[in-house]
Image (cartoon, rainbow, N blue to C red; front, side, top):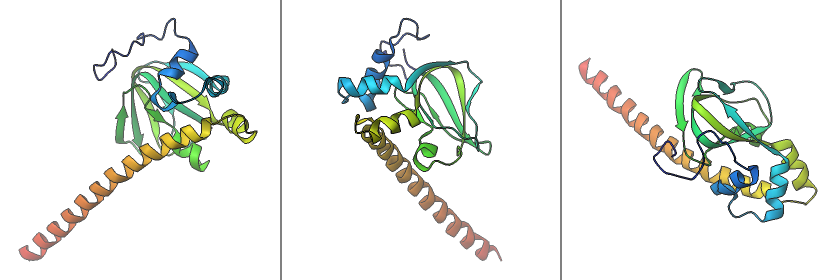
Length: 175
């Protein structure tokens, strides 16, 4: 059972899971051909993270992308909660993969997690050699998630600007 109540057939502890089966369950990878899945597997590993443990630390650097198989993570920037992820296939770590800069936020396991950790340097090498379409699939997933985040940020910005105008008007009226 996943955190949102769906039974996705994944064991809670990740026991008896084959890495290939895990990758095939991730929505972003369901369109990949078998040879691309094999290349992805070469750059991946399953990681068990106990609840409360930090997975990514803000301002640190590495080239890993994480896909949530089971569990729940919290994402914080400067100790301010940005969001929580809990669905199969949710991913994090994409911003530093895209811009090759330090991590922009801290990610902590809210409860025990099973993650697929993808070494993006290895994926880059396969794609540069023309051997794989994995990067195209990954970047397509990035674009969908980032477009959704941008829409939400636009809505929040609009709300906040309206609030500023409203409060400014109230202050001027009280003077």
